Image (cartoon, rainbow, N blue to C red; front, side, top):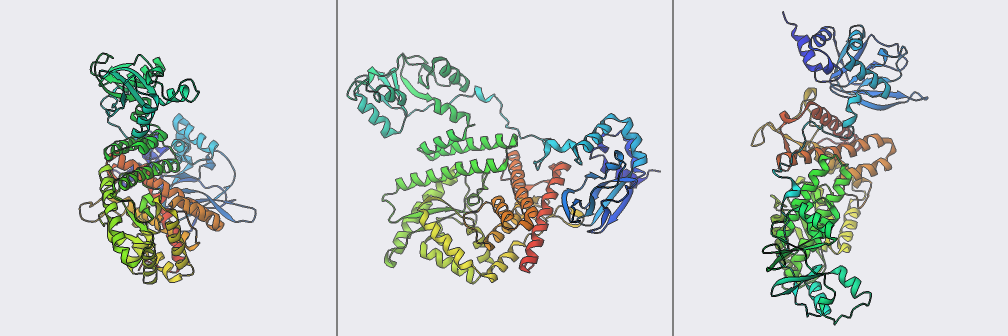
Length: 639
């Protein structure tokens, strides 16, 4: 008769090294000897100086803190063991007492593996022996996890770009709206045309056929050095003959041609020779933008973009860049900084173009505020737009007229942002909504009202608006607003208490025995909401604690916790764990979103590896710990 308990133990052990390296019969033999121990929270499995046990251990459910003890007998947690983690291996190698404590961090079920039964298998199985030797030598519980250190997810499933053809063999888009001049045109007139059209070259044509090309470099080398006068004809400084290709030249061809001829522009003609009509031009800049792998080039492209359609194309390049960063496991701080700047530049360029298209100049100075994830510099994927607008105070009789102007501008901006890829906010929390297009005094009154009479809706609005970042306009306005907000918050314990209660509205996302809490009904039934249950609790906690300390100009969640670690050294370990967990969860959501081409918010747990689940649970433990701190500090629970 099959021992069902041993079979379940073997099934669990098979997922984790070194047991995953055993033969099937060896695994079942070990499983039959395993002892199952239950510990309440805070119980010692072994202590420093204690004689070694006859077993080593693996966590089945719960968590265990490994602690070193200093000269003053003060314990310090140096590692945390979670589901599948092995500890207490030292007796296999060193005949000495335990050097650390192992204390349960929560209710736990621990499997005890007898050394006498396991050691012969370790000796006879080279893979198991190597694992244990490396573990002991490197002082790590699992040396095989080094390749995943610092990552939330495993590399078992890579993001696929689904490219049917090699990228370098794709055609490079040409610029059709090029500037052309005749050979007799003066250098000054050609330069004026280039400046007016914001381009870096002009094509010299005769009967619409290219005979030469003049670039910024030619003006610098020929005119700036005094070799020619500005009233000389442009043909004296043009480069000729012109290198031509037909439409459809590939990225690889363009790269090789520019390198071979030491040029940075290629003319596109009807048949690919200088004998037919010029159709367009390809520049080295266009080539780099097409490659989409250089943030500085993308930034220049954004700032030069003269249409929403162009900005939308650049946005797709930014997503391609993000895929590469995530695939190569670039640190999230680096990714966030770059993506924030590119997103910010895109929004700024859109606003600037819309201002230029308005019939009149803005009647007063104003500032465009990005809210939510963009305001916190955490927006990586395509998410909805949250924004607001503040304008200078005007006389009462001009207030509505001024607001009407900025509402019209906001409608233009939000419409174009939607085309680019930033979805409309379902709750209409956008500058085109009269509620969020206010004068400076109105905004100050609004915040005072929210803070003075903080109902649930007011608290939610405050949380969003506390994370704003100026994207465009007069920084003096947003600074004044920030000063006002911190002024009314100073010493306002009642509001901070309500904010604390709201920060606990999403408790730790693990149920009894650490099972994930998933959606119970609706369209997302059985899916895990990583934003609501993982990212938002840390965001809310970081915001609350940084406001308590009256720290301005830090809106990013990880940066807030890193600052808190400096301000409260006694809680440094917890705050740094929160900073790491915030970045790890955002990166995990981003990878899921890129993989499934959505916003990554809802996750099918069946698609995750066991390692992913374990590492997510470690992040969620941090959420539980920071919420416990908030409960004690502000003496609240969720209302």
